[in-house]
Length: 464
Image (cartoon, rainbow, N blue to C red):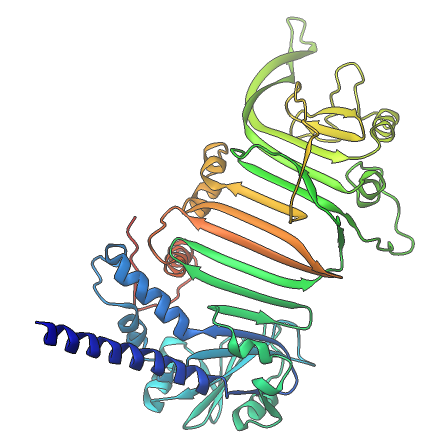
């Protein structure tokens, strides 16, 4: 028995070594790929890491992927029979001198016959020249030989054939390790994106998507020691910002806006802190004015009280409360006796204004009393939305239809040095067991099938 266990353990260890060695070899080979020397933006899709993550999810939660279609993901992808060799990493790049959002890539062809059938039948491309195919709207283009294909997507129908020829023949190309994108080669994230100002990463876990991005900060000066009011953790939506906006000159001859919410007025009053909170749904009574005819056939005004449910919203901002109050009064936007904001300024909801101790508040709650005590934080920006409560507190079918699979979104941002911001976010799904990418694909396919024909030959069932 002991001997059998030793042999079994040795076999398992060898299999694991082979498994990790195989994927390591694929990564090494993939990172030797060449990219155009003029690349200004690079997107990396880590195919192997996605495969491994989804495979582990299959093993941990097999019931999530059970259904009428018993095929696994690999079999479903194989069913497409693209004829392409799927590498460990797929690199997609934008080039200097090309129209914005024009992207290129290069892949090897494993089966030229299958590839030809795929582009003609599945993609419905049109042959323009020998080995050069385009979509009907000329936005998707392929140029290939017997072993390799160069791909381009251009939203403005730009001429891309010359660039495709250079990519196909690997002319004017450099190794990623010798380029400004060298750090991308070693990233194990599922998706990574880099340009001159930004490095972003996305990972698809079971029941959630993690996103992080570090980028140049051109818009805001975060507080050196961020603080915020303690917001209600049970809020439907909550947000706070502790930082000053960098000054930006307005275009010449631009007329000043009289709106209190205009950029100029906001920056004039704003003193470095703002928060927003949607706590629950409240009842608000509005007076609706209608007109009807009396017995003398004279049109008379009739006022009717109407009760409706609205979001319980409070907005707090550090500002010179006397200056803001005087501005609202002089503009005729504020009823001093009641604190009501005029419907001509904010027609959607009845808001109430309060100002004291360097803070102003706009709220749909007439008796709201903000707690101005502040607590420290490493982040200068925070945002959270609870989709379950949002759906319950709104009567918009589109929101429930599109957001019903999500649980919560949380976003944080902190300063990481001079003119640098790191943003991190987490999107949680209601189904915490199935992989987030599989759930997204299912949502995308179900949500758009009525208007778009993807001509897909496979389904991805996800059980809840």
